[in-house]
Structures are given as C-alpha cells and as structure tokens.
Image (cartoon, rainbow over the protein chains, first blue to last red):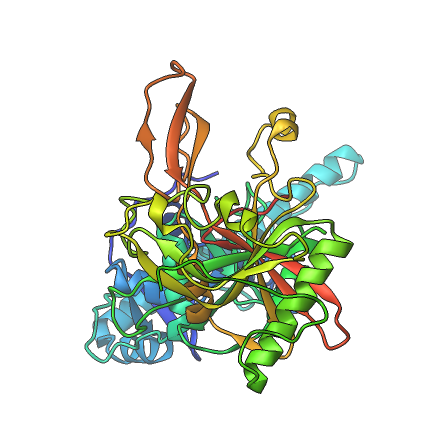
Length: 267
Length: 231
C-alpha cells in the first residue's frame, strides 16, 4: 500500500452539480483521520455503472461535512466544471504544444513496448513448441493509443480560494446537531438507511457499530409523539438509540444544544 | 405556596383540577398512566408532581438536591390518607428540611409521575453485569403524553430542567478516559486501576405514550448522549 502523502491545508473540495467531491486519496484519508469526516465513496468501474459495492474515488461529502471543513478553514469549495474550463482555456500556446508532444511521445513509446512484448511472447511460444522462430516486424504506429492512467491523486491545478466560491449551505437544524456530535468525537454518516438524518458512530465506522440514529430539529419545532415512538422503536430494533435534539437560538454560535436519546422502555 | 397541600383523588370522585377541557384531558391522561403503572406493571409509591424544588437554576451545577431529601421524601406520602390510591403534591412540599432561602419552586411544565418499579428498569451498558444484579431499584420519572400531542426539543428540555439534579458515584478505569457527562471529581481512592468519581447523574424519564384506546407504551428518554443498552 502506498504511503500517505502529506496534505496541505486548505485543500479544494470540488463542487459538481451541488455535490461535494474529493478526488485525492490523500485528502480522503487526511479528513478521516483528522476531522472524523468519512464521506461516501461513490466511484464505480467505468464498465459497471450499476456497481453498488466496493465503490472507489471520488468521495462524496455530505453538505454538513463540506460546511464543517470550510468552517474550520481546512478546505475551500471550487466549482469543478468552471475551474476545469478556465484552466483549459488559459493554457498558453507553447504549454499546449509541449503537452501534446509529451502525450505523443508517451503513446509512441507505449506502442513500441507493446509490440516488443507481443514479439517476445510469440518467440517464447515458438521455442516451447519447436516451431520456427517468428520474423521481427515493425510496430504499427497508426493504431497507437494514449494510455490514460487512472489517478488517485487529484491535479490541484493552481486553485485559489476565489471570492465567488460556493458555500455549502446545510439545513441549520441538521448542521447544529452534526457539529454538536462532531465536537464530542462522534463520526457521522448519512442516515437514510435508517430513516434519520445521521448515524452516529462512537469511533471510526470501520471499527464500531453506530450507537445513534440522529435527527436534528429546530429548538421549537414540533415533533409528533408518534415520530418519537417510531424512532425509539426502530432504534431499539437495530440495537441503537434514536436521538433527537436542537440548538437554542439557531442563528447564534453560543446557543445551548440539547439532545435526547430514546430507547424502548423495556416493559 | 410554602404550605403542604396534598390532594387525594379517589377513583369515584371528580378530578380536583379545574374542569377546563385541557386540564381535564391532562388529568385523565395522568390517571390512565397511573392505573397502568400500578395495576399492569406493579409500580408502587406513585406520585404526581406539578412542581418541583430545585436548589439552583438548571444552568449551574454547583449544588444539587437529592431526591430523598426534598421533593420525594417518604414523609410526603405518610401525610396522605390511608385509602388514597395516589396523591398529587401540588406545591412545594417538605421545604423545611432544605435551605428555604436558596430553594426556588420550579413548576413542571406538565404533570410528571414518580414511582418505584418492581425491578430495576435501567442499568448502564458499561455496568458490570454481576454487580448490576445487586443494584437496588431506583425511583423513576414518568412523563404521560397523548399520542396525538406534539412535543418539541424545548418542551422536553423544560421537563428535564424541572427534575432535580442527582449525583452518583461510579467506578471507572483510571487509564481510560470516559466521556463523563457531568464534571467528575477524583476521590483518590481505589488505587491505580480503578477510581471512583462523583458525577451528575444523567437524567432519564420514561415517556408514557397513551393511545386513543388507552394503550400505554413506555419509551426511555435520556437527557443527553447515552449509549444504547444493547449494541
């Protein structure tokens, strides 16, 4: 396994169509270790677009995760499409020719190497079967390919925190309970599977089962008693507790957060 | 308000609470839950509280009153007539025992029941299971609610704030940093491996949800982050 390379902060979070993505595997492990931000791997193999297991890069962040990283000054958001276009357009003439020349050279080298590999294997086959040795041929330069390597490290371009950078804007109630639990050392992941906003793990999700199914509310927001019952019942059914809570004075930082853990009474 | 007023509800007499419909509904709700606890779940010492004493405002945790010394003193019930099923202690009771000048009466936003279940209902998952069997039965708080009602974080927080603070002594491993909800003081006894800390007990309440057909279900609500019993 390759060693993790150090990450310089702030790093870019790429925003594509209202999703927040990380392309660089070093950043992915960095945020997991330092900020308890796990995100969700979302990349499939190109030929299996319906793959839903063992997904890979890019890592998609919840809007709360992106907001937290931005708030802590660890990251900034970059509009991926616009940045890609402008950096393509801003490429100067000589840079462009040099890049194309490099690409041509590498594809030619690749073609020659492939031809040589083919020849060697035919030769080995002939020797093993007492056949006449094949005559060497010239590599076919017409059907050469440019081999694009899949990269787990993102090109950083030369990204700057532009003033018009997009801001992830999570729901205030959800973000309040997200940050509250984050501060207590919990790892949070999306809660859709259990019909809540977040699942809270007491440590890294690879090592622990989650403890809580979390729903954030506004301080004075009404909640049906039936929702508390169903939440409590669901939580107990999956050996977790259902948690709901809110922050007093949602706009201010100094508001007090209150959370309640609900379980079935047991009698 | 300082006088002890203990009202007795007989099953045949009408409710002492003013007969406005909201109050009547609430009294009815309380009565259903009380009956359920007493007859179906064999609880004892059932009492209804519409107010509580707290020695300090909820925000400061410097001092706390214990249940046995103030609101829930057994003497409260001994004054009640013998034939009473349960009593409603409507205002500050047994104030003389505590510190009158420091006590302020916090009214429960709505009636809350206390009672003694036949067996201990909750043990923390980290508790040693052998020791846990020997732990004594704890008095529990019950909040009756109707299924058709709505609640909110603020309203539930107000109920918890009205419950007096308690302290508990727990033994924790010394090398392990345990996430303590309240601030703990080190007692220094117990050597290197174990230490005993006093901390504010995490409040819990059983939410008794009453459905239209008088079915009652009980949900345990903890005030704060408390890990589930089975995980």
